[in-house]
Each structure stands twice: as C-alpha cells, then as structure tokens.
Length: 205
Image 1: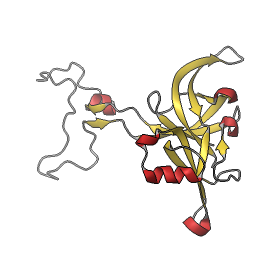
Image 2 (image 1 turned 30 degrees about the horizontal axis):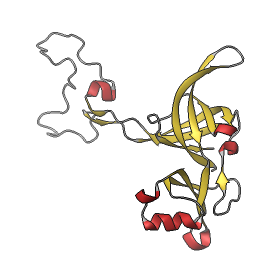
Image 3 (image 1 turned 135 degrees about the vertical axis):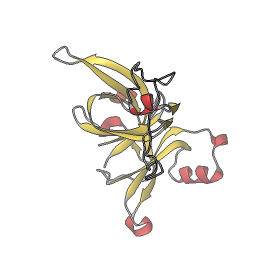
C-alpha cells in the first residue's frame, strides 16, 4: 500500500465546477526519504521505511545518526513503515507527493485532539436530565444509574462513564484527493482528518 508521511496544515474550502462549497484539509505530504528497505530474507517481511521532517543533529542519538547516514540523509523526526509499496525503491530515494493523483481515494491516519477529562454528555453524547424535576438538584449533566443493586453487585466492564477523551489513533477512510500541488508538496483532501494543526498524519492509497 503506497503512502506518505505528512503534516496537517489546516482546513479551508473550495468551490467545485457546480459552484458547491466543499470543506477540505490541506496537508504537506512529503518529500519522504527511504531510510530502510525491509526484505523477506533479512526481516521476514517486505516494507519501506520512510522518514519525514528534518531533525536537529544535537537532538538525535548516535544510533539515529548512524541509521540515517546509511540512507545519505539527515536525521528525521517521523519514521513510518509502509508494506506492499506499489513501486520498487532503493535506500536514499526521495518520494514526493506525485505518488497521488487527483480524484483518487486515500486513507488518512493521525492522533485525534486531546480533550482531557470529560463528562458523559461531551464524551458519549448523553442528554442529561433536561431540566426535569423529581428531586434533581444540580445534577443536570450526571450519568444517572450505572449498575444494579444486589445482583450483579458491580458495574459491568465497558460502561460508558466520564474519562479521558481524545488522543487516540484514528483512521479516516475513503477521502477524495481534490488537488495535488506538486511544486509545494501540498495535498488538498475532501473533508476533515484527525489531529491538530502541524500534527503528523499518514496518507495511504
């Protein structure tokens, strides 16, 4: 599965040929350097390891510097492996946004925005008690009853309750590529993708 590592720039909107306003996300996709080639004989599987976004040498370990030196490049901040790559590539090859074309569909993976500790209304969409009476005092956003009494005398695992929200690996599938701006390494994708601005995303065909 061919793909690239990118950085989310932000969201905007464009008009199509029918005058419809389409929300879209702009991603800086690549250029990525092939930093390792996995083979079946050595590693037991075939894959390409790609590196994206230059890293300062003083913030890199000697192991990292030696690893990236074999590929003839500087240390990278983000490294991801892609299996079943469409084309053959050698160590040190540079892969650009040209691997994508307008009109095709891609999957985008990223880490969703962290929301911190949230209650059930925001986290799970509970409705609250809606200004009801029957002794409700300052309990409008409470979760309500969470378990039975004598049997089973416990709360079942998986009960929807308050807790930490966001910060999860999320993949959004079948997003259409609206534009490919090769000279600026930009990819314009229909809809929204997970993550905040300047966060890393993985784009797969």
